[in-house]
Image (cartoon, rainbow, N blue to C red; front, side):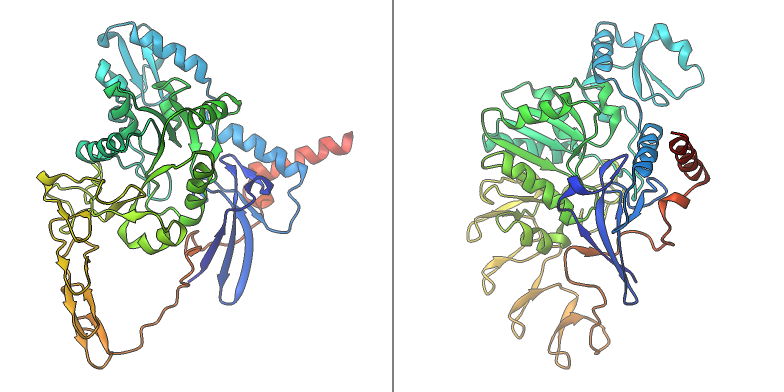
Length: 444
């Protein structure tokens, strides 16, 4: 199996694909090493075919080709015009509004004929306008824009703790439900939505939404106004918080670089990072001051990561990593969470304090048991094996456990195994574009 190391430093020097600066990947397979640049946002090249071998010149011809590809792949968006249309839509009754899923825009009933064969949603209430995540159809492709939205209870836990921490401004990075909640409250706390989904342009003005790629810190808008809006928001008065919910398959290295970027620009930044509990060690290696809370993050459109009938028996594996003090990050008693006084931390119902370990040791939703021989708490299905001299799943084969994968958090089997081909031969259309450009240059 191939192991890929991801480098996210000096992004400005990297070639750019339609989604901003690319990341450098080092693929090692069967003692063969390949270094290349690929899209930061998409793991599958069906969605972004950019590939450029490291060490090769990214020629002017290739730059022109990819500039053309950017125009082809990304929608042309005039945020100012969409903002004006939003104000126009707000002036009419819900019966005279509609949203076209085909065109990804709001419009008036008077122009309904222009969308006769499109997928249209009619009767848009004021509440729906202020909660666009309830209108937009989530993109749930695991290798593309996986969009899983917080339940109301999870949103409430996050926002309530931000208010308790006296936060003034919240950067909602991939967390539209948190942004909607803060905007609806109308209190002192302000928020700015940073999201890769361009459809939010139709629902939020320029001071409330920035089209953003969290894997390379790239503002997707062509003009500088979006960059200024982000900079002004971060530089404002009061305490700033970053609430981030990346795709579950997102690599930690570029994500941590994004967190560090905002940490440098906002003093005493409060961080709430949603990620699976089994990535705890990797996150804490990058951010020792973060601590994993016991709260199980729930998503209303994920069939397993919620408390519904089809939810996981052990609950959602997604947790909140934050630098808010554990005792002050209050979890809902109504859901069984309780304050462990020895640990000074709110913990889940099944998490029992171990006197010997002097900690609440459960991680995955089960009540762990203490092994006196190992001197540590383990999962209840595990038992101590005298042959292996440690606790292991029961039953198991008493043999040396192989560790084929690297333990380096920068390495991960990320991109699908596929034939490495130069971008010049990726498709007939791109090959034709390059040939035409070369002919034009030869004429001059």
